[in-house]
Length: 383
Image 1 (cartoon, rainbow, N blue to C red):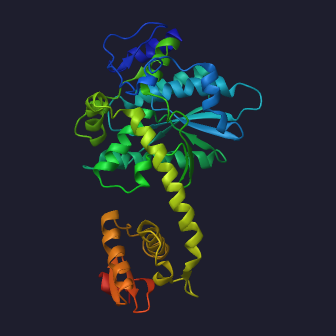
Image 2: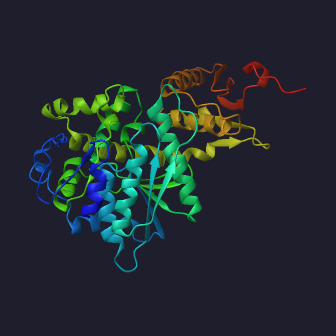
Image 3: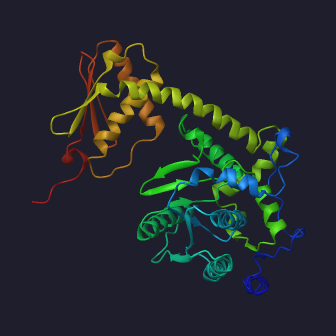
Protein backbone atom coordinates (compact mmCIF):
# COMPACT_ATOMS: atom_id res chain seq x y z
CA UNK A 1 0.00 0.00 0.00
CA UNK A 2 3.04 2.34 -0.07
CA UNK A 3 2.00 4.18 -3.22
CA UNK A 4 -1.54 4.52 -1.86
CA UNK A 5 -0.30 6.22 1.32
CA UNK A 6 1.91 8.52 -0.74
CA UNK A 7 -1.11 9.52 -2.80
CA UNK A 8 -3.20 10.07 0.29
CA UNK A 9 -0.49 12.18 1.86
CA UNK A 10 -0.70 14.71 -0.95
CA UNK A 11 -4.32 15.50 -0.09
CA UNK A 12 -4.72 18.74 1.88
CA UNK A 13 -2.83 17.56 4.96
CA UNK A 14 -5.92 15.93 6.45
CA UNK A 15 -4.86 12.34 6.00
CA UNK A 16 -3.73 10.28 8.96
CA UNK A 17 -0.91 7.97 7.86
CA UNK A 18 -0.66 4.99 10.15
CA UNK A 19 2.13 2.46 10.50
CA UNK A 20 1.32 -0.75 12.35
CA UNK A 21 1.60 -0.24 16.09
CA UNK A 22 2.27 3.50 15.77
CA UNK A 23 -0.15 6.27 16.72
CA UNK A 24 -0.28 9.61 14.92
CA UNK A 25 0.83 12.31 17.37
CA UNK A 26 -1.63 14.92 16.12
CA UNK A 27 -4.67 12.66 16.05
CA UNK A 28 -7.52 13.76 18.34
CA UNK A 29 -8.21 11.39 21.20
CA UNK A 30 -11.49 9.60 20.58
CA UNK A 31 -14.09 9.47 23.32
CA UNK A 32 -13.69 6.64 25.79
CA UNK A 33 -16.47 4.45 27.07
CA UNK A 34 -17.29 5.44 30.63
CA UNK A 35 -18.51 2.11 31.99
CA UNK A 36 -15.71 0.57 34.12
CA UNK A 37 -16.44 -2.90 32.74
CA UNK A 38 -15.52 -1.63 29.28
CA UNK A 39 -12.32 0.24 30.16
CA UNK A 40 -9.92 -2.67 29.74
CA UNK A 41 -10.73 -3.17 26.06
CA UNK A 42 -12.36 0.09 24.92
CA UNK A 43 -9.26 1.08 22.96
CA UNK A 44 -8.21 -2.37 21.72
CA UNK A 45 -8.41 -3.34 18.02
CA UNK A 46 -11.40 -5.29 16.74
CA UNK A 47 -10.24 -8.87 16.28
CA UNK A 48 -11.12 -11.18 13.40
CA UNK A 49 -13.35 -13.36 15.55
CA UNK A 50 -15.23 -10.32 16.83
CA UNK A 51 -15.76 -9.04 13.30
CA UNK A 52 -17.25 -12.38 12.28
CA UNK A 53 -19.74 -12.09 15.14
CA UNK A 54 -20.57 -8.48 14.25
CA UNK A 55 -21.29 -9.41 10.63
CA UNK A 56 -23.08 -12.71 11.31
CA UNK A 57 -26.48 -11.14 10.67
CA UNK A 58 -25.38 -10.23 7.14
CA UNK A 59 -24.19 -13.70 6.12
CA UNK A 60 -27.37 -14.66 4.27
CA UNK A 61 -27.55 -11.50 2.16
CA UNK A 62 -26.75 -11.57 -1.54
CA UNK A 63 -24.92 -8.26 -1.81
CA UNK A 64 -23.61 -5.64 0.62
CA UNK A 65 -22.99 -2.01 -0.31
CA UNK A 66 -20.63 -0.43 2.22
CA UNK A 67 -20.66 3.37 2.43
CA UNK A 68 -17.09 4.64 2.79
CA UNK A 69 -16.46 8.33 3.40
CA UNK A 70 -12.74 7.82 3.94
CA UNK A 71 -12.93 8.58 7.66
CA UNK A 72 -11.52 6.12 10.20
CA UNK A 73 -14.82 4.41 11.03
CA UNK A 74 -15.82 3.61 7.46
CA UNK A 75 -12.28 2.68 6.38
CA UNK A 76 -12.03 0.13 9.20
CA UNK A 77 -15.52 -1.18 8.38
CA UNK A 78 -14.43 -1.61 4.75
CA UNK A 79 -11.27 -3.49 5.74
CA UNK A 80 -13.07 -5.78 8.20
CA UNK A 81 -15.87 -6.53 5.74
CA UNK A 82 -13.35 -7.16 2.98
CA UNK A 83 -11.62 -9.83 5.08
CA UNK A 84 -14.92 -11.38 6.17
CA UNK A 85 -16.49 -11.42 2.70
CA UNK A 86 -13.59 -13.39 1.21
CA UNK A 87 -14.79 -16.54 2.94
CA UNK A 88 -16.79 -18.99 0.77
CA UNK A 89 -20.53 -18.44 0.76
CA UNK A 90 -20.34 -14.84 1.95
CA UNK A 91 -22.25 -11.98 0.25
CA UNK A 92 -20.79 -10.01 -2.63
CA UNK A 93 -19.17 -6.82 -1.31
CA UNK A 94 -19.18 -3.49 -3.16
CA UNK A 95 -18.39 0.02 -1.90
CA UNK A 96 -19.43 3.57 -2.69
CA UNK A 97 -18.31 7.04 -1.67
CA UNK A 98 -20.54 10.11 -1.91
CA UNK A 99 -18.70 13.25 -2.99
CA UNK A 100 -20.90 16.06 -1.69
CA UNK A 101 -18.79 18.68 -3.43
CA UNK A 102 -18.80 20.91 -0.34
CA UNK A 103 -15.01 21.14 0.03
CA UNK A 104 -12.24 21.56 -2.52
CA UNK A 105 -10.53 18.41 -1.24
CA UNK A 106 -13.59 16.15 -1.47
CA UNK A 107 -12.98 14.90 -5.02
CA UNK A 108 -9.42 13.88 -4.20
CA UNK A 109 -10.54 12.20 -1.00
CA UNK A 110 -13.12 10.15 -2.91
CA UNK A 111 -10.41 9.09 -5.36
CA UNK A 112 -8.21 8.04 -2.43
CA UNK A 113 -11.00 5.78 -1.17
CA UNK A 114 -11.31 4.34 -4.68
CA UNK A 115 -7.58 3.54 -4.60
CA UNK A 116 -7.92 1.82 -1.23
CA UNK A 117 -10.80 -0.26 -2.57
CA UNK A 118 -8.67 -1.32 -5.53
CA UNK A 119 -5.96 -2.45 -3.09
CA UNK A 120 -8.56 -4.51 -1.21
CA UNK A 121 -10.17 -5.88 -4.37
CA UNK A 122 -13.56 -4.30 -3.61
CA UNK A 123 -15.53 -2.75 -6.53
CA UNK A 124 -16.09 0.95 -5.83
CA UNK A 125 -18.16 3.81 -7.21
CA UNK A 126 -18.03 7.55 -6.58
CA UNK A 127 -21.49 9.13 -6.36
CA UNK A 128 -21.59 12.92 -6.78
CA UNK A 129 -24.13 15.30 -5.29
CA UNK A 130 -24.48 17.81 -8.09
CA UNK A 131 -26.46 21.02 -8.40
CA UNK A 132 -26.82 24.05 -6.11
CA UNK A 133 -26.27 23.54 -2.39
CA UNK A 134 -28.48 25.08 0.32
CA UNK A 135 -27.25 28.04 2.35
CA UNK A 136 -28.58 26.59 5.62
CA UNK A 137 -29.28 23.16 7.06
CA UNK A 138 -26.42 21.83 4.98
CA UNK A 139 -25.66 18.73 7.08
CA UNK A 140 -29.25 17.49 7.00
CA UNK A 141 -29.61 18.17 3.28
CA UNK A 142 -26.28 16.46 2.61
CA UNK A 143 -27.42 13.44 4.64
CA UNK A 144 -30.65 13.24 2.62
CA UNK A 145 -28.74 13.51 -0.65
CA UNK A 146 -26.25 10.87 0.49
CA UNK A 147 -28.91 8.28 1.31
CA UNK A 148 -30.80 9.07 -1.89
CA UNK A 149 -27.68 8.53 -4.02
CA UNK A 150 -26.79 5.33 -2.16
CA UNK A 151 -30.34 4.01 -2.56
CA UNK A 152 -30.25 4.68 -6.30
CA UNK A 153 -26.87 2.98 -6.57
CA UNK A 154 -28.08 -0.06 -4.61
CA UNK A 155 -31.08 -0.31 -6.91
CA UNK A 156 -28.81 -0.09 -9.95
CA UNK A 157 -26.79 -3.01 -8.59
CA UNK A 158 -29.91 -5.13 -8.48
CA UNK A 159 -30.44 -4.59 -4.77
CA UNK A 160 -28.05 -4.51 -1.82
CA UNK A 161 -28.07 -4.04 1.92
CA UNK A 162 -26.44 -0.70 2.72
CA UNK A 163 -23.85 -1.07 5.50
CA UNK A 164 -22.72 2.03 7.40
CA UNK A 165 -20.06 2.58 10.07
CA UNK A 166 -22.11 4.22 12.82
CA UNK A 167 -20.47 3.56 16.19
CA UNK A 168 -21.39 3.54 19.87
CA UNK A 169 -20.26 7.17 20.05
CA UNK A 170 -22.57 8.13 17.17
CA UNK A 171 -25.42 6.40 18.99
CA UNK A 172 -24.77 8.40 22.17
CA UNK A 173 -24.65 11.69 20.25
CA UNK A 174 -27.90 10.84 18.46
CA UNK A 175 -29.68 10.07 21.73
CA UNK A 176 -28.53 13.35 23.30
CA UNK A 177 -29.64 15.32 20.25
CA UNK A 178 -33.06 13.67 20.35
CA UNK A 179 -33.42 14.29 24.09
CA UNK A 180 -32.73 17.97 23.49
CA UNK A 181 -35.38 18.06 20.76
CA UNK A 182 -38.03 16.49 22.98
CA UNK A 183 -38.24 13.09 21.26
CA UNK A 184 -40.59 10.48 22.68
CA UNK A 185 -39.70 6.93 23.73
CA UNK A 186 -39.36 5.71 20.14
CA UNK A 187 -36.86 8.43 19.26
CA UNK A 188 -34.82 7.87 22.41
CA UNK A 189 -34.07 4.34 21.25
CA UNK A 190 -31.49 5.98 19.03
CA UNK A 191 -30.40 4.31 15.81
CA UNK A 192 -31.35 0.71 15.08
CA UNK A 193 -28.76 -1.85 14.05
CA UNK A 194 -31.04 -2.96 11.19
CA UNK A 195 -33.82 -0.84 9.74
CA UNK A 196 -35.69 -0.13 6.55
CA UNK A 197 -35.03 3.51 5.60
CA UNK A 198 -37.28 4.39 2.69
CA UNK A 199 -36.03 2.29 -0.21
CA UNK A 200 -32.90 1.22 1.69
CA UNK A 201 -32.34 -1.86 3.82
CA UNK A 202 -29.79 -0.39 6.24
CA UNK A 203 -27.40 -2.28 8.54
CA UNK A 204 -25.16 -0.75 11.23
CA UNK A 205 -23.03 -3.64 12.51
CA UNK A 206 -20.61 -1.42 14.48
CA UNK A 207 -23.29 0.34 16.51
CA UNK A 208 -22.10 -1.27 19.73
CA UNK A 209 -18.38 -0.65 19.09
CA UNK A 210 -16.64 2.43 20.58
CA UNK A 211 -14.93 4.69 18.08
CA UNK A 212 -11.71 4.29 20.08
CA UNK A 213 -11.54 0.63 19.07
CA UNK A 214 -11.85 1.52 15.38
CA UNK A 215 -9.02 4.05 15.73
CA UNK A 216 -6.97 1.31 17.40
CA UNK A 217 -7.82 -1.07 14.55
CA UNK A 218 -6.63 1.50 12.00
CA UNK A 219 -3.41 1.84 14.01
CA UNK A 220 -2.83 -1.89 14.16
CA UNK A 221 -3.47 -2.45 10.46
CA UNK A 222 -1.72 0.65 9.14
CA UNK A 223 -4.89 1.90 7.47
CA UNK A 224 -4.79 5.48 6.14
CA UNK A 225 -7.87 7.63 6.62
CA UNK A 226 -9.16 11.15 6.11
CA UNK A 227 -10.00 13.68 8.83
CA UNK A 228 -13.00 15.73 7.65
CA UNK A 229 -12.63 19.25 9.09
CA UNK A 230 -16.42 19.56 9.40
CA UNK A 231 -16.19 17.02 12.25
CA UNK A 232 -14.61 19.78 14.34
CA UNK A 233 -16.90 22.60 13.17
CA UNK A 234 -18.95 23.73 16.17
CA UNK A 235 -21.56 25.34 13.95
CA UNK A 236 -23.01 21.84 13.68
CA UNK A 237 -25.16 20.46 16.50
CA UNK A 238 -23.64 16.98 16.50
CA UNK A 239 -20.14 18.41 16.85
CA UNK A 240 -21.21 20.47 19.86
CA UNK A 241 -22.68 17.40 21.57
CA UNK A 242 -19.51 15.47 20.76
CA UNK A 243 -17.53 18.13 22.57
CA UNK A 244 -19.70 17.68 25.66
CA UNK A 245 -19.32 13.90 25.79
CA UNK A 246 -16.09 13.79 27.84
CA UNK A 247 -17.66 15.93 30.59
CA UNK A 248 -20.82 13.80 30.57
CA UNK A 249 -18.72 10.65 30.77
CA UNK A 250 -16.95 12.05 33.84
CA UNK A 251 -20.39 12.26 35.49
CA UNK A 252 -21.21 8.69 34.50
CA UNK A 253 -23.29 9.47 31.40
CA UNK A 254 -20.94 8.03 28.81
CA UNK A 255 -21.69 6.32 25.52
CA UNK A 256 -21.95 2.88 27.10
CA UNK A 257 -24.45 4.07 29.72
CA UNK A 258 -26.58 5.75 27.05
CA UNK A 259 -26.52 2.56 24.97
CA UNK A 260 -27.74 0.62 28.01
CA UNK A 261 -30.58 3.12 28.40
CA UNK A 262 -31.51 2.65 24.73
CA UNK A 263 -31.58 -1.12 25.20
CA UNK A 264 -33.89 -0.85 28.21
CA UNK A 265 -36.15 1.59 26.41
CA UNK A 266 -36.27 -0.94 23.58
CA UNK A 267 -37.92 -3.48 25.86
CA UNK A 268 -40.55 -0.92 26.89
CA UNK A 269 -41.06 0.08 23.26
CA UNK A 270 -41.64 -3.54 22.26
CA UNK A 271 -44.27 -3.97 24.97
CA UNK A 272 -46.15 -0.81 23.99
CA UNK A 273 -46.03 -1.63 20.28
CA UNK A 274 -47.27 -5.15 20.99
CA UNK A 275 -50.38 -3.68 22.60
CA UNK A 276 -50.82 -1.10 19.83
CA UNK A 277 -50.66 -3.86 17.21
CA UNK A 278 -53.37 -5.80 19.05
CA UNK A 279 -55.67 -2.75 18.97
CA UNK A 280 -55.01 -1.65 15.38
CA UNK A 281 -58.20 -3.39 14.12
CA UNK A 282 -60.13 -0.65 15.96
CA UNK A 283 -58.72 1.82 13.43
CA UNK A 284 -61.14 1.31 10.52
CA UNK A 285 -60.72 2.92 7.07
CA UNK A 286 -63.72 4.26 5.19
CA UNK A 287 -64.97 2.41 2.10
CA UNK A 288 -63.11 4.78 -0.23
CA UNK A 289 -59.99 4.81 1.96
CA UNK A 290 -60.08 8.60 2.24
CA UNK A 291 -60.85 8.65 5.96
CA UNK A 292 -60.36 6.55 9.08
CA UNK A 293 -62.41 6.01 12.23
CA UNK A 294 -61.36 5.11 15.78
CA UNK A 295 -63.73 4.37 18.67
CA UNK A 296 -62.12 6.06 21.67
CA UNK A 297 -64.71 4.64 24.07
CA UNK A 298 -63.41 1.15 23.25
CA UNK A 299 -60.00 2.33 24.47
CA UNK A 300 -61.16 3.43 27.91
CA UNK A 301 -58.71 2.09 30.45
CA UNK A 302 -55.86 1.75 27.95
CA UNK A 303 -52.64 3.65 28.82
CA UNK A 304 -52.43 7.13 27.34
CA UNK A 305 -49.29 6.17 25.40
CA UNK A 306 -51.16 3.38 23.61
CA UNK A 307 -54.10 5.65 22.70
CA UNK A 308 -51.70 8.40 21.61
CA UNK A 309 -49.96 6.03 19.21
CA UNK A 310 -53.25 4.79 17.76
CA UNK A 311 -54.32 8.38 17.10
CA UNK A 312 -50.92 8.99 15.54
CA UNK A 313 -51.39 5.95 13.27
CA UNK A 314 -54.77 7.25 12.16
CA UNK A 315 -53.25 10.62 11.37
CA UNK A 316 -50.40 8.99 9.45
CA UNK A 317 -52.82 6.83 7.47
CA UNK A 318 -54.84 9.81 6.27
CA UNK A 319 -51.89 12.19 5.81
CA UNK A 320 -50.11 9.61 3.64
CA UNK A 321 -52.90 9.96 1.08
CA UNK A 322 -52.47 13.71 0.91
CA UNK A 323 -49.90 16.06 -0.52
CA UNK A 324 -46.92 15.04 1.57
CA UNK A 325 -47.17 17.62 4.34
CA UNK A 326 -44.99 16.86 7.32
CA UNK A 327 -46.54 15.10 10.28
CA UNK A 328 -46.63 17.13 13.50
CA UNK A 329 -43.96 17.21 16.14
CA UNK A 330 -44.68 15.07 19.16
CA UNK A 331 -45.62 18.06 21.33
CA UNK A 332 -48.42 19.09 18.94
CA UNK A 333 -49.66 15.53 18.54
CA UNK A 334 -49.74 15.07 22.32
CA UNK A 335 -51.67 18.30 22.89
CA UNK A 336 -54.25 17.37 20.25
CA UNK A 337 -54.58 13.71 21.24
CA UNK A 338 -54.87 14.31 24.98
CA UNK A 339 -57.52 16.99 24.41
CA UNK A 340 -59.53 14.48 22.34
CA UNK A 341 -59.07 11.73 24.94
CA UNK A 342 -60.29 14.07 27.69
CA UNK A 343 -63.30 15.18 25.62
CA UNK A 344 -64.24 11.56 24.85
CA UNK A 345 -64.13 10.74 28.55
CA UNK A 346 -66.61 13.54 29.24
CA UNK A 347 -68.91 12.77 26.31
CA UNK A 348 -68.07 15.99 24.46
CA UNK A 349 -67.78 16.63 20.73
CA UNK A 350 -64.58 18.27 19.50
CA UNK A 351 -62.85 19.07 16.21
CA UNK A 352 -59.13 19.65 15.77
CA UNK A 353 -56.98 20.31 12.70
CA UNK A 354 -53.46 18.93 12.53
CA UNK A 355 -51.01 18.49 9.64
CA UNK A 356 -53.66 19.12 7.01
CA UNK A 357 -56.07 16.64 8.60
CA UNK A 358 -59.36 17.16 10.44
CA UNK A 359 -59.90 15.06 13.56
CA UNK A 360 -63.62 15.12 14.44
CA UNK A 361 -64.86 13.55 17.68
CA UNK A 362 -68.59 13.01 18.21
CA UNK A 363 -70.37 12.73 21.57
CA UNK A 364 -70.33 8.94 21.38
CA UNK A 365 -66.54 8.87 21.29
CA UNK A 366 -66.12 8.09 17.59
CA UNK A 367 -63.07 9.88 16.19
CA UNK A 368 -62.91 10.44 12.42
CA UNK A 369 -59.70 11.34 10.57
CA UNK A 370 -60.07 13.05 7.17
CA UNK A 371 -58.01 15.28 4.92
CA UNK A 372 -58.68 18.98 5.42
CA UNK A 373 -60.48 20.47 2.39
CA UNK A 374 -58.02 22.04 -0.02
CA UNK A 375 -59.58 25.51 0.11
CA UNK A 376 -59.30 25.58 3.90
CA UNK A 377 -55.58 24.87 3.52
CA UNK A 378 -55.19 27.78 1.12
CA UNK A 379 -54.86 25.44 -1.88
CA UNK A 380 -57.13 26.04 -4.83
CA UNK A 381 -57.58 23.45 -7.60
CA UNK A 382 -56.79 24.48 -11.14
CA UNK A 383 -59.86 25.58 -13.13
